[in-house]
Amino acid sequence: ALSLSTKQTIKISGLLEGSRAVLECLDFKEAASRLFDVCSTLMGTSVGFVTLVDEDGQGREMVLIETGGRECELDLYIVFPMKGLMGRAFDSHSSVFENEFSKSSHAANVPEGHMHLENVLFTPIILNNKAAGLIGFANKMGGFSKDDASLASAFAELLAISLRNFQN
Image 1 (cartoon, rainbow, N blue to C red):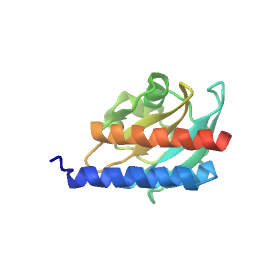
Image 2 (image 1 turned 180 degrees about the horizontal axis):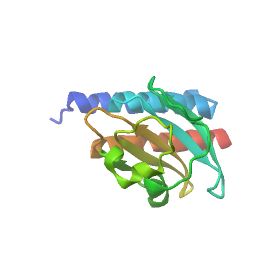
Image 3 (image 1 turned 45 degrees about the vertical axis):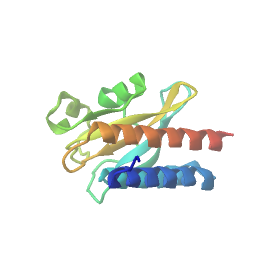
Image 4 (image 1 turned 90 degrees about the vertical axis):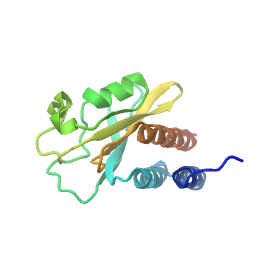
């Protein structure tokens, strides 16, 4: 007989909770908030965001920002350029993470006054075979893993379904 580990059972429960959020929330921002909360809890981080891009991929709308109680001197709702690791996730349609972000060349893309980012994970929200936005996470104790990237991808799919429902 096949038995699930406690970790697998918790992930499945989280995905089911996320699916309920997609069904219950008529407002995309509410769904995004619930999905982000469940995913970040499963990963063990409280810092991150959900953002959408417009049709031409230029402008962005910050849907949700969670600082985890950390100080940030920036207006986080300003539009950051889609470059560096965010750009790579967006262009490749796949999750990317960097566990030594603060020591990497990508840290140069972070504006002055932004909160300290020790590690990051970015996952695109894919709708109609195009990146429609990103879900991002940061500052996970111990760093991100391939399992975290896979989990974020599953929640990004739920975000895409919710976005499609909202657009319809």
